[in-house]
Image: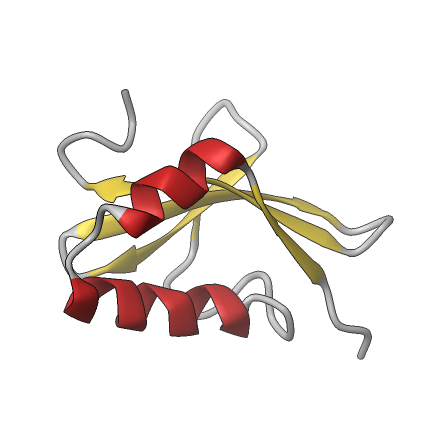
Length: 85
């Protein structure tokens, strides 16, 4: 099984750097695991979009998957009350 390339857009990178350390470490591991499995247990496809999300406690990681070129693009990392805005 080919690995996916993980791309993080600058907005998501800024959001990631603002997170508390403990949350950041957990989310970092989850994002890296998307290389091997972009649709892990517990992922969810968001209605009426091409985006997916994974949960980490009260935080969410929104991303898109391009299976043709094997790219996972992380679009947003934020608290669940803010992430869908």
